[in-house]
View (tube, rainbow, N blue to C red):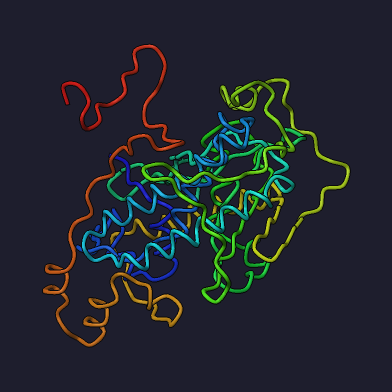
Length: 388
């Protein structure tokens, strides 16, 4: 079996090796028995934006499409609350539900003028061979001979008016906007560009588009909540005159799909004036276009190989990296503190953590591509299906 490293594994390894050792699938693979009973608004908003940018609905009338986005957001929060069980505070979840609805309503007004692209894929997964840092023409293998693979997911693949491909990343921001230099130096983002070019051989990724939404301030006045009819979804009054700046070539997204890696006629055309950074800022939203040079993307692939080669070592020293920034949100803070104090963390791990269950196909997830759709390919049987 291949030795699989995920985006999250590498991020935790670079942040704190002890956190990585506890949670990574190739290490102890642990997770808390009880997930945090607080809403993950960032995740719910990304689920909603996956519906908003679904290619098959990109040219639909907004009066039809936007209520589906709100439904996607509400269902995402409902799934989170269900996983938390009885530990969820209904008041907190209702507050986040209303905050997210208001934020999305404002986004629907802001985004049409900023969306100078057409969506191609929403939340697609990729898995690629990691190259050996010592031999860039060969794949990396472990000491036991297992092939090393890197797995990840992107929020959105989009194409602009020049038929250039971009990876779009959605992010919820707390407080002030982070420095643009921080976005340009984001290792996970540029590594995703490298990985996607390995995943779709022949496709060139022009750069990363950061689509940032600012978290509503608790002190800010709440937007007026739409009236709800009993037993029905809320009715929203959307502006229906807005149309996408970059439209699909064919109805329902067919013209912007990727049959193999690109249509023969859709060769990217570099604009005359191509600034390396282009940014549009408003009080609640920021859109940043970052072009990546080919050498920069290739260097990210080499850095990935160096990190993963270190992660795959049998004699790797696992040491913590305590910091005020990261330790507060770490799910393994308690056993780590016990170990730092020279105590046995075994009882804590056995009573409050469990082995992470294997990944399963998410029924109905947009962008899921776990099986082929050609002749002879049969989808898996989900719960409740005939004979399941």
